[in-house]
Image 1 (tube, helix red, strand yellow):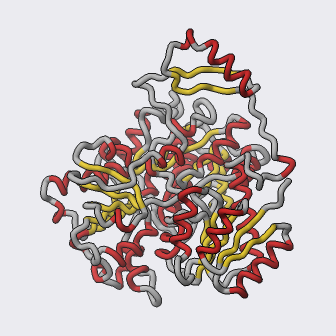
Image 2 (image 1 turned 30 degrees about the horizontal axis):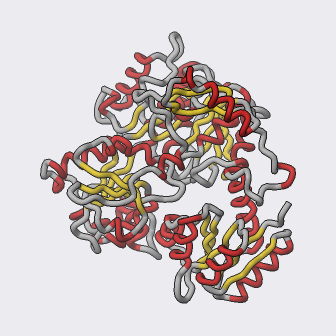
Length: 538
């Protein structure tokens, strides 16, 4: 096996030398460059498997070098920088980096991150030379030809030709139908999205992160003739947008920094609340009590609308449904311990506790509770889920955090386990891992929120929303009108256990105030069922 090669690009020789010592001791081959141009030259000549890239360098900086690498190469890139604000990290990850390490750093932590990124890269790129020798072979059982547009009866010779050419049997042919849409993997689908503004249309930009996994929440906008939706982290393209969508609390720093710079652009911050804006606006000395501040002092209220969601409600309904449907050993796999994910998780625990109390089985219900510390699945998290489904006999896991469901689903598929989706109805994706794997999904209405605001803009009613920070949740006894809900079409209702009528009654009780759900995220709610917290996996 060829030795794994790592490129270190840093104008501080002492840091580069220190990193080299630790990497060489772990068996890696190290190339060093003191500037971006030399680093790009090494990349052209050598087979590099990972780049450690400083941001602040003379001439071309690390952000620009990262963009250039991403034009032709998908190898892991770890940013090294003394800049530690959330906005700096967002910019670094947004240009294509896979990880961001703040200087000064612990060399042992850095090497651990290097190993983690190489492991993930080799799993996604099986033919990479970075693959470990004992895992360097791929076992392909057969080929499936997807979206074949011709007459399959006339394709026998083509099948034979492919089998002779590849030495692998063709096990099936999926015909092309205009009315059947076979969903691509997230990364493939996202690569096909528009990335630029178009003249003559209302341009809506979604801030693009490399690991963005909930972009499908905005698919409805792509079919809206009023607008042109595109995904980008390019500053020049963002400046052309009429509306910018910022999906996540991390973008509070961007709203504080940019809304006054671009007064003619309308900003929609999803999952951005008063506390997020105050924290970034006040900075050092913030007391974490937004009531003590005038949040409007920190951003341009005239061109900004923000919304948070009462995720604890849809989390509650998912946990309630799971126990009512007969599951007694539950799991919660959160992405990162951020406010929205915590509200989902704590609501899930409260819902499971409420259902257990009604059924008189409080002592029989337990919840394993952990965060993956990232919003995507990988081998480490899948292995962790394997122990839950196998050793601990967990029956269903609420996978709460973008693409982290992949790890729960991979583990569940091995034992016939169940998964609960999040944000949108994820059943179509999760069920690809096993028929009827999805119990339900704890949904929140991101697309409904954006549609509401776009309609207001079109009707000349933007002023009714500008400067508002709404907390969106239950507004009706009708589930379809609420911003938090379960999917009625795909939830696994069961007669005598939990039916659609039972769900309607639950919604009515929550909306009417008969059932109270706490949104406090300072600590795990006090409940009668057993909850075991494990912190984070990574």
